Amino acid sequence: MFKFTSRLIIPLILPLLTINPPALTQLSEPARWATTIHSNYRIYPNITYLKANNTELNLDVYALRNTEKTVPTMIYFHGGGWRGGNKEKNILRLLPYLEMGWGVVSVQYRLANISVAPAAVEDCLCALRWVIRNADKYGFDSNKIVVSGHSAGGHLALTTGMIPESAGLDRQCPGNEKLKVAAIVNWYGITNVGDLLEGKNQKSYAVQWMGSRTDRFEIAQRVSPLNYIRGNLPPIITIHGDNDSAVPYSHAVQLHEGLDQAGVPNQLITIPGGGHGGFTNNEMFRIYGAIQNFLNTHLNK
Image (cartoon, rainbow, N blue to C red; front, side, top):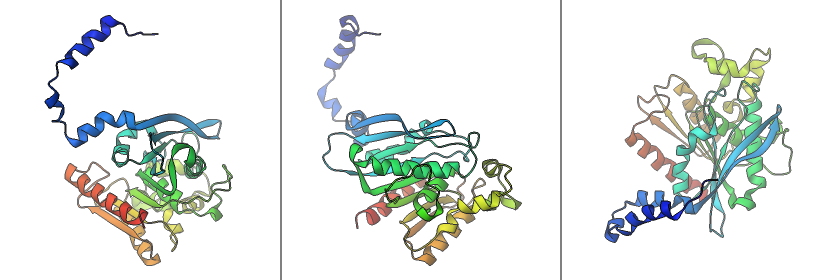
């Protein structure tokens, strides 16, 4: 085991002792927050929330330290077309919620090379059940759980927050907990899976996720958020570029129109000329400002 010795420590400390104290006051507010985040959060990596297909499915928990009250919590699902990606590559996407003092849970689910649809949807519902079941342990406010994700992760956030118990997609992790979320933040997520299996909008990632099964269109219907629009859904905010070549912008429009007709509080943030992510800094400032306003409005009622 590597050990620190005085010969190592003294050269590290001496430069610090010579720092002019007033220089420390020049740190910006974001810099001050970045230097103290390690003492404000406790990280619990790779907790197993489900075993399926002989695979342990893990999640990472970022829990606020030194607080006696429960806090709003974001559950994040990574993108990758249901066939790639992992929770570790998306840590920086969690920073806005950590900065707000929220709890965060980042989820890994079964990809297409392990199990085709609807496995990923089932896993994410089980992750939600785990979070609700363990809310007291980690200081989560179970009444203020928000789900989010980008691309395929946006789709999984939508299905996790919209699919009712009657669909039977949570049977891999039975429990008495009511699976509910307070809001959904959807970053250019797929809303109509069947639309991507054939025709002008066909996408190889969707075809691979469905596999060669003969009932693939039936399964696509079961995992398409558009089929679960109804009046008692949580508020939903969607961000989508109108020049997205990976997930058609029409998916966001159809979701927005359907939610409006059902009377569900929702907002569509359109990025003119925007593609599949890669938005400019100014666009991101506008997006996160809208997200914070949306969540503040609907979580604090």
